[in-house]
Length: 407
Image 1 (cartoon, one colour):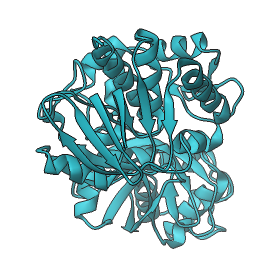
Image 2: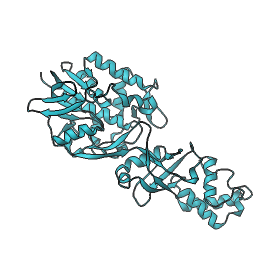
Image 3: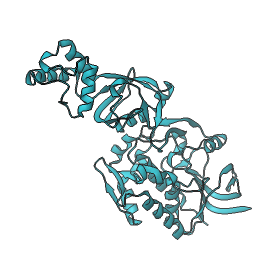
């Protein structure tokens, strides 16, 4: 059986739904279908942000927003000038969903539930008459001069324009590769570091604003660092993993990091500060109270790691001990041995080569009438609502490009 549509979207996730809704809102005459291989749609939306859905980020200047994308920074500048985070807020408001900004800039539905976003999308596609077909796993793609043929495990579909929003799906990448596209090999991005080290052994849950460098490399990032039972996590580490996705993959996730627990304070500044503390608090016990803005438990651990006993007074610190303490504070070295996936939010670096996409229209430069949105292309972002913003922006541009089809 041949089911005919004007436009078929493969992939029932954020980018797929956003494209579909905007297409039919632009041009209600179009017959549009979303094909999803799973039993459910919008699964990533459901689990994002701990089930609250981190819709976007309160960064409203395109040239600032692009800086959160380790891959895609240059390419997204134009698209973000067409549809940015402010437009996302307005779009959802128009569709009955109010968003709120949290202290760290992340934006969520006021309801604090991803179900609000899912309901918004599901009711919109229903109202607009968009067919959502689940359990449809694409087996092959064929392009003639006039139309696309999309064969699934159940039936054969035909359409004039095809939109792929399948995210990190190796099978789809392979199909598009066979049709002439170059695929940048996918590697994990946004992961946490496995570290076994006596200094952090019993500090699970402790957090500090730190800067982290990968030893013998240019990779560095800063932000809150969270100690976990398997090692280190938190925005600072995730940022580093995103920017270093490829380099750390090549190191087989075996490398050393240097942590500055005082964020941007230098060795010299810290040494001088400790000398002042030595005079000021001469009679007090060093390990008793953290003089810095991080928890006492972490301070105690750093003091012990500097070969200073729990009873030592500030006045009794030797030059060697001061040196050692300064080093543990500003340049503590830890050995990373493997990685762990960050929650269920699996993000990969890789996908369709950015040189093969026209970012004014999101149309493939290799296969005319094929459009690409979301993470199927080699674009990814750090955590904080940025990956969704890429889905909304690319979906919006695709919709504008394809909705002018004549009957």
